[in-house]
Length: 350
Image (cartoon, rainbow, N blue to C red; front, side, top):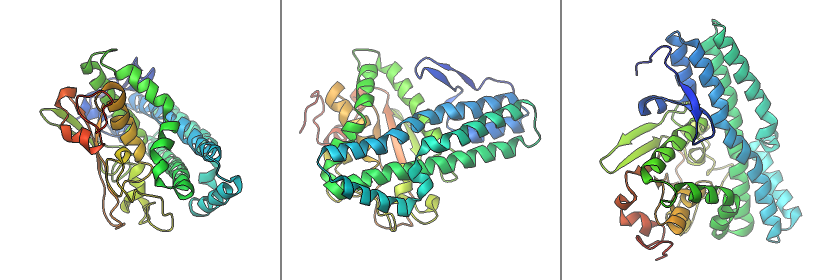
């Protein structure tokens, strides 16, 4: 991909309400840290600095929910009558496999990433000869923080399954994402804005969010974009969050669904997990937010997902593909049936 020196890479996004990357979809499919290094190599240190700063913006939503969700899972469990002592024992077990730093939470580690990114951005603007190394250092810091935070969240979801059974997963994610559901419905309902606007915003949100998840085999945040006549796809091979549950290559041979972690995957078919066996309990939230909830509230899925499935074999590579249809009427009936819904019937359950 050719990099245009001195062309802007960041601008304010009215949709996101903050600075965000701009450019062609080809440019946006490249991870933010990789894009920063490409700009340095092209002699555009100012753009590289802008990209380092916007990496903080991309990661901030994860900082928020990854800090909140474990405590909210614990509160939800005790509200259902789980013995606090039993919950504490499970959290101690989780600590023994993911470590003390991960259990402390993302907020405690955030200042290290923030300060490193801002310092590297300043030094890039000053033309520091170590600029590329600085980008790599910031990337490594965020990668560690992100992955530890994912382990903490997914580990708490696993605790819920261990204590209450997998049947509670749909209800638990409904609780954790209630605010997201309301915002999603308000924005993307066809009563509030044209689908062409919604589709573009949904695609922007995909690339913005998955840059921060550091998707891809080398964890740079690179996405594969797929254009088809009726839809546009974004493939993460693997995803940097749910993919860690299933993919051996990006976890040092220890996908979190395998020993010693043993994080839960579905053992039965459920509407909220695409009626597939082997969906990791963390990935359930993608089905609920993008498929089940939008069908129930606005009549169609906003993003259709082909998820990875745990086969019990840690060596398997994984990929996840998200599709945005050019028009909701083009979504196949099979997408609705896969989650136990009936197409064309707002909120209609089969």
